[in-house]
Every structure is written in structure tokens, then in C-alpha cells.
Image 1 (tube, rainbow, N blue to C red):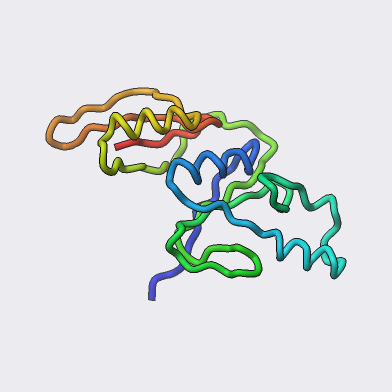
Image 2: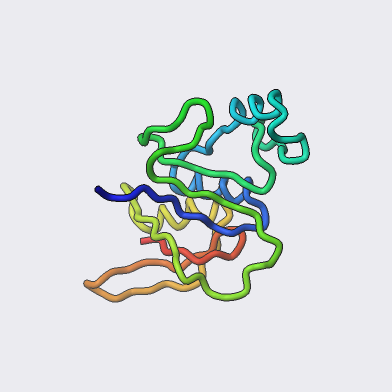
Length: 150
């Protein structure tokens, strides 16, 4: 049986980066508001562990997105499928990613995808054209994490 997984991405501002990637991938931002309210009411967490973003309560320093077609827990909002978790870390990004996301273009092609991603806050770094082997753009998200648009 295959194991479940999520990709965890270090960030400077988890909720903002989650918003970017949710829009880029057309995923849903997880809403843990019901879970947080239950934990606060039971005294299991204190108010300092919580903040608000996008009209929802979130755990300070964390935000996650999930594929809209995958199952999720209704109480916690946590996805049980394709999922990215963003966590704030104190140190800035200093080197090239050892792992990156490839975003594949749909109808409209690569030019439309790259333009849409730039409109969300991504930056073009370098175009790669390998002829019949492929054509893509190396890009950076708003925090400088590299990814490919193909």
C-alpha cells in the first residue's frame, strides 16, 4: 500500500505563500477555524498560537493548501490527499532548492500559464528550450523558491 505524504515548504510568511500556491495550482487553502475554536475553548492552545488570515483562524506560522477534489477532514480542514504545508522558519532562503514543483500548462499553453503566474507574483528566471525534449520556464515564487512552468 502506498504511503500518504505532504510536501512541507519553509517560508517567511506561510499564509501569503499558501495563497500564492493555492492560486497558482488552483488548490483550496485549508481552513482550520473549527479545529482551532474547539482547541481554544478546551484550553488546549492559547490565543498566541493563533492568528487570522483571509477571514479564517489559522495556526500562527502555518498554512496549508489541498487539491479541491481530494478528501479532507471537515473538522480540521486538513486534506487527506495532495497537500502542501507552509511553515515559517527564522532563517532566509540562501541557496537553490533541492526539490521543486513543476506546474504544467493546461489549455492556452505555456505563455498563458507564465503570464498568469507572473500576475500572481511569480518571476521569470530563465527560459529552457530543449527542442523535442521540452520547453519550460524556470520561475520563482514570491519568496524566491524556484519552480518550473512547462
